[in-house]
Amino acid sequence: MIGLDIAFWVLAVVGIGAALAVVLLNDIFRAALCLILCFLAVAGIYITLSADFLAAVQVLIYVGAISVLIILAIMLTREVQRGSPSNRLRIPAFIVAILFLGGVTFAMLNTPWQVSVDPPLEPTTPALAGLLFGEGGFILAVEIAAILLLAAILGAIVLVREK
Amino acid sequence: MAVGLEHYLILSAVLFSIGLYGALAKRNAIVILMSIELMLNAVNIAMVAFSRYIVPLLLTGQVFVIFIMVVAAAEVAVGLAIIIAIYRHRETIDATKIDLMKW
Image (cartoon, rainbow over all chains, first blue to last red; front, side, top):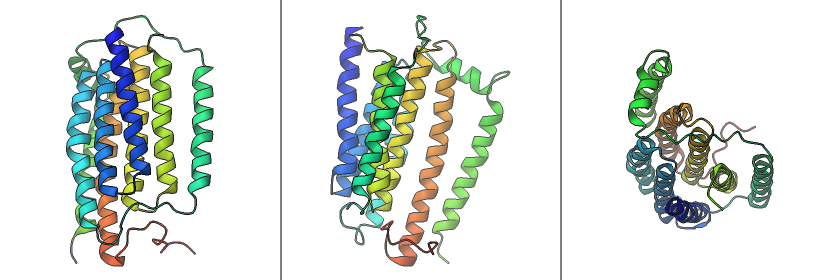
């Protein structure tokens, strides 16, 4: 258990540091690289929560696909937008974020969570497959997700197509 | 003190607040999109933590995370396509200058 605790603290520090770098760095390309580091830290957090399948999916989708899309967009639009400046709402945005953090932390620490003592399922992949595709599971949502992805792909093609 | 549910929830809240600040305070539309990704990841951490500590044998939170990832992927694809289209037409991706629908 002590190894898991150390892993959690290291991953939390790396993730929060990388997330701060995303919003504070002025070089947008470095911000994107820090975002990838943050995604990797989140994948590690999933492993400490014994969600092995989700950690693999996180690496495949976020680190593999979404980061490539973001870097591609940065490179395509690099000459018009140098750096990542703040708009004039910087201080109100900071206050809103701090107030939100305080409120949520207060609510989380004052809620009596019913923490279960059961050990986690391991491995999770067969159970997830049963939930997604099995009897009484989420099969309708899976079908809707497929339609959503198709619509998103078609929409992206239509939006960026040359006239 | 052993790491428990509250630690994961506070980590998630901190990441969400950082993303919220970025989404509200940045000019560059791509940085705003990156901040939204941070917020979605924070929510995913909270979901998995609830699934692990409250109902460890049900995995419903992990199924939710899979669907959030699907929606996030679709959102990034469409969002970046919109940004590229705006860049082509107006030569800017500054969110404060994209005010065509503002009156």
